[in-house]
Length: 403
Image (cartoon, rainbow, N blue to C red; front, side):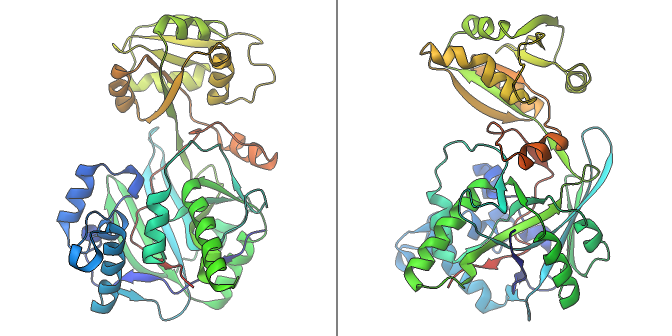
């Protein structure tokens, strides 16, 4: 089972306006978002987490060198301050989900053990799509720090109870209706209790598969350079929460298809789904999909049809919409068609993105029960099967990760 350890966190100094310096994770930010965040404050975390350019006289124009320089400067100037002793950070998010239910999600930030692929303890829950990882690796090499946490789900019970009493409040902010609050936990007995709960069962990666893979590469590089297996590179920054249905909110990541004509795509889907007219796609459609067990095929002009699974068409296929679509469209790939799939979260964003595609398919969120079952069976879901919300903010905690 994975080790989960406290560390001397780097935090913004007391009195810092967190609204000015905390940011969303790097992989959800557009160029315009990054520019706006950097303009908000010279110490906004994006200056380090999403570096660009760099002073040629100081770093040769290397953005990652610029990020490392900024991190050292902020520490020297007292913008960032290290904790006096190793700590965990309790992180809570209070929000209202898409269905109108009020939720409070609680987890803990600490150092999660970096294990080899397939070794167990820390488990992927879905197949990952090819993705350039040089950016995050280069940033880690330069800063020797973990900036954005991996999001893990503990399959053990009792973590939420262990975090219920809270810790020392160190900051909060409310963004887009979500209240983010963090508390420092330094009591040795409680640290031991939390670590023991997490170490008692597997941790499933909910978000940040690529970040975790980067941590494995970084760990191996540090081992090769130092000959040691006891450095901070043996762990990576992670938020770990309990796999608790009352806390977690999961939304769907819809599919966009291109590379073949619409009629060919529709015919392939019709072999596994009955198609029925749908007057209009609205937010209410998403709820009806879940209630009736249906998907939706969307044309570039926004018109749509229901996709109703045929009886027996998916016998032996895991009950996941992503798996259903892979199964239904497998003959298309087998025939040599250049079918390409991309992914889009959000209904409005999907309806806009499909205008430039052959078609899109709206799918239903994956259930927590299916996530747990898949993990216990040691299987992987199709890529982009889950979208956990809200997203963790970056900048509450930085974890030193060097030798």
